[in-house]
Length: 516
Image (cartoon, rainbow, N blue to C red; front, side, top):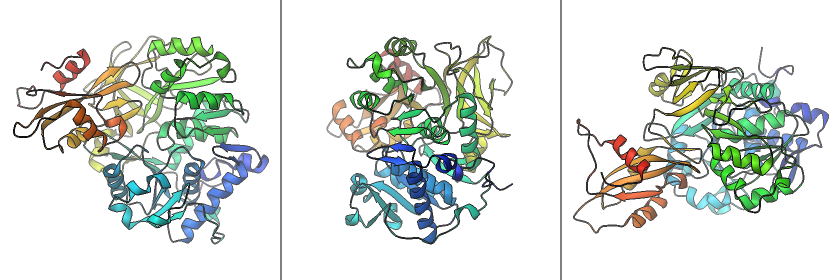
């Protein structure tokens, strides 16, 4: 049966129950309030405009936006038209932007006017149409995203999209030196929304306060899509600071649903101006990515009187574990396998491990990615018989709860964002004085992990300080990639095969010493 039949949820009719019954109900709260009808009409208009200009289902639409309602208009316009949304991490700098535009083959690039000067540095951006949000982009030949043109009255409901059509292309750093494009199908996003609501009941009375970036899957899949399908409201915070978040909590409407990374939640609950009454309307708060420190569990409960729910997942799988939002929790655990998802723990040979033993997390279910964009080799490594090998390590306890142990990969997770060491190393090696570089992660109670770099210098060049190198790095990479500490050493340790001993450097960073 085609996806668009009215008896079944599809991405293009996700808003329809509330549009039909309560069109004037507030859907989005940003710089202005958007009703469900206004939001739906804006997405429909944009979808028709793009199709009228010659775009076809399957074409890619890239966007680099903060948490603005227009970002959600772009998502839903893509859902309605069959175009593929390609959200870029807002912290990307020109090298990352240029790579994603080229790799995705995007036809249109949507960004806010404040980023247009940087975008102009990207060679790929000169060959595609630009659309601007938040001001006049004429200087860079960028058209307004939401113009007043009248496109043809294209019947969007007539198109029959397949469930396995790609809907979103999320880029995430992996074990290679370049971001990988994770393909999420229409069926995966639809199933994720329905299964979330099956386990976490939301209603028209719920209002989600969204501070996590809309350009990443956590906010979209955990808060936005379920809340909007339930008919609730979404309040968008463009940038997180404790003061701005608390001010948003104190303004109407009453916020009932929070979700944020452990690092931002830590800042919030430890802010001296936070009061228990600020959280009086909150009934659900989800944090995680992997485990959440016990100290944060305790601080959150002391500040709010609520128990914290923890989720674990990755871009490739969506959420695969969740502590019961309104049931018994084990602080420190990442909860039970997410509803509708099969989670297995296996050893190096692929055999199931027993309860209490550590194994690699393997996830199977309707939320799992379709594969990596234009990377069949990496897809075959990660997806085996429809199951995703996550590289995460965990154990089951006697009650079937999962406990996150660590990662097999070298990926560093800082503030919920994946940092690929090779990308940071490549940037540091651009400095004329740097001879070698190795980047590792060190555990941090607030940020999850901090980025540490070990470098050796060329003797024939003036020696930069660690501070000099950090400034050099800040100009060339996203903020979360910039090393917290850069250690200048005489030489890097080697393995027997002559390779840099990354494990030894990791332990040096964990121990807080630089003697290698």
